[in-house]
Image (cartoon, rainbow, N blue to C red):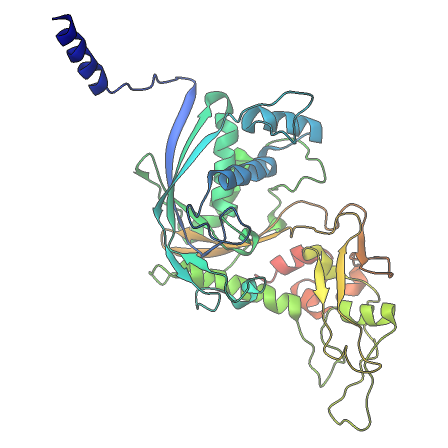
Length: 422
């Protein structure tokens, strides 16, 4: 009899579904997203899509930490780091003494749609945005995912601001600052989220910045958002009523960056390859330039003539930059390939963010300049024995750099000058 009761009790216990006790101090949400531009990478290996899970929790946490700093990280570096650790925890590399803290922000990613592989030559990809990709790199189109997130109520304001900034300006995978992996929020706890109309995007962003942007002073070296209107630019919307609106405005805004940044000279009027000063600056610094060969009717004189002098303003758009010259292999020709980089920190992430924003009636392209130094600590060098060079311009220089002059006759910040072309 006792054995029978024991068996029945075990069967009853095994059938029990024990629900976890709800913690009234924890907020949980399930947020659904879709990518409105192709995913570049996103896995454990940089720039490569993961074969098991194309969007990983570690990447989401990294994105949230960045955007928390960008919208809530006021104060000194120490003050910011302490608040960040309270919310997101500390890793072994960040610990002070022996103290390690687990993140209070828990995230779990569920892939709802794997999407389809596309190549970098696909018509949905701006050609100027894919130059770092190898021929065998694969992009993903049509990805959708759900994010289950739980946070303590004490961090509610911070996480709401962080999620808004990430969803509006950020993305997933590689090269998100050039618009890859741009996300659109579809629903929160199965309640559909309706995006603003195209005509409302500018006011939508301004209103949310006034709500979410922390009040105070940022450390100058922390890239962050600002409500300064000259840090934002909006393209004409695409309202064609199809799912490709985001791709259309994305390709358009990247093409504008291409024209601004490359800006070849009219060979019949100007000498040299570019309206920018860097090629001639390198020729002067290295003492090498191609000259006219009387036996070659196609040869050109490349004597440096750019009046701005030895300045490298495009370094403000991110480092390193590699300069290649067409005639470098000829005798007495142009310089060998040169690299512009930071002196103490080789890389400088671009302060410029380009991406589409989906609207209820189409899509708008947005350009955003983060508040951050335009040079890395220690300055900028032309790699090798050439030493420190200058990226900053004077107002008098603008008249001699056509793409900047056409954008604004007085703006010496290259990033903000470009925003005026959108």
